[in-house]
Picture (cartoon, rainbow, N blue to C red):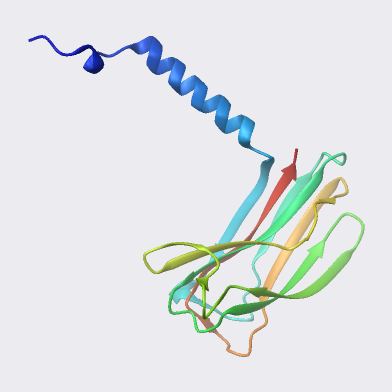
Length: 164
């Protein structure tokens, strides 16, 4: 049986296409993921006493970094925001920051990527990339909402990216 040439495998062309896609993907990246980790909450409920901690090392002090709050929740989450206490233990000091993250509004819905009834937010902690000191960092998250436990929360965590 003779197949049209379009259906014949051309391994050199396939390898070239994969190589080209890889180059495009690498060239389009503006950040390098240094660290990302989330904590999972049983029964999709985050108690204020649960304070997940995340520890990572910084070795490059010449780069700038973006730090994100990562949150996964169900569509049934009752609020358009979340208040978080973030404690950062750096090589030089310990700081606690209370911060509100807006997750959505009544007009646009959730400001997140979603699949079915699960939504994921990656919201920056810092407005502009910041330098970090060399050493070990520990980030501890605590939900600071009036509702305790906070229902319909699946995961919470952090992401650290190095800006190229």
